[in-house]
Length: 211
Image (cartoon, rainbow, N blue to C red; front, side):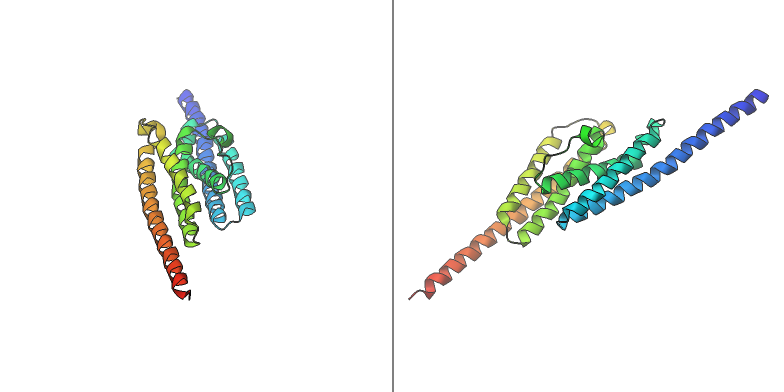
């Protein structure tokens, strides 16, 4: 049974190494998610240098994650790793769209299609938040521009009709994008009507004050 014992030791060593890589990957994934969330928060606060700093941190962690899991593709494509890369994609996309910059590609971010597309979809939810912030400041016309971006995102995602196994449940994300886009459209329509009513009332009041 010496051969069996030898095989057992070899297998144990391989599993120990893989488990260690998994634990490291979990730590890197959590760090990516944290920095991505902080980057998005900084974008909404118009703290773009801080947002970029967190994005750089997240991308660095993502690079380490890829290196750590290079020998273990099954761990790389596990839920926690792909979720982290989705959050990174979302942060980079939100940073670009809100700042009027060019949209980064999956190749540039070094992520696969599934986490990128789901990150793109979730970015639409952050654009809704940005639209609402703009509407509260009274700039409904600028909000229309971001609503158009949300429409463009939905128009792309809805055409990608592939099995969930290769898109990471993109259909669910697409349904979410449709919902937040329509709600934002309704909010913006109401805001425009209220703004028009306010302007009409102000104009009427000015006319009435004239001698």
